[in-house]
Image (tube, rainbow, N blue to C red; front, side):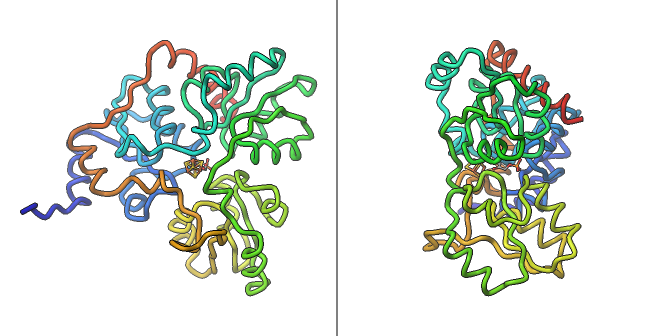
Length: 312
Ligand code: 13P
Ligand code: SF4
């Protein structure tokens, strides 16, 4: 018989004993966000990982986030509850194919979204997140041709915002491509006063309908500071935990997806691989831990540090 384990109490205890910090993304399950020491968007999580003095970073997020934490703070042990917690966007940009693409456009500067592997970062001049992408692109001289990878939706949005004509890699996030325009219009008709807000990884047709477009922290700030009372939110549904907590008197509706057999909203299967039980086992055994080859890390940290410098 398996003894009953109170995962929350055990996680708290182990965190103290081992001087570990639990970092979680807004797309994590509610119960994980609840016990995290810090919850944030990709940029804030990278900043926290870079500056923490904890001995162990427990990353409740996906692989590329934990890998970035390890690159930024290599003397720390970085653990991820499930090594299979990947990212469709990162997977849509394999290093060999990207390296070929880069060779075909040798006069281009490479800006990559943080949602990619360390190998792709090592091939980049700048890394960005959805919080700082515009600022980073605008820091590059206007006449300088740019390759933007891997997200074509964010890239197209940024081209429009900055008036650039960046060459886009053809990658996308399954979670943000799942929204149904038809159902979105229907829900909006039922809530005509609701504002549509969207993450820039969403398709252009969805972004066209949006009153506000921003990163997860951008969306949270927008709702918190808005006088409006209702919002339809086109991003991963995990954001509703923080959004409803911060705005108990506002109506917050997740944007509907095409195939709603399982849930009526868009969930990231990778983010949801992390559970309290896996989190507990991961802290207890300090496994699986993330290692990044030293040579690779030396190259990959350059564009990440450029991003952090430009984000101050
Ligand atoms: P941000 O939290 O930086 O907006 O990123 C969204 C995302 O898709 C993370 O995987
Ligand atoms: Fe990747 Fe999309 Fe999941 Fe974010 S939501 S981790 S971009 S698959």
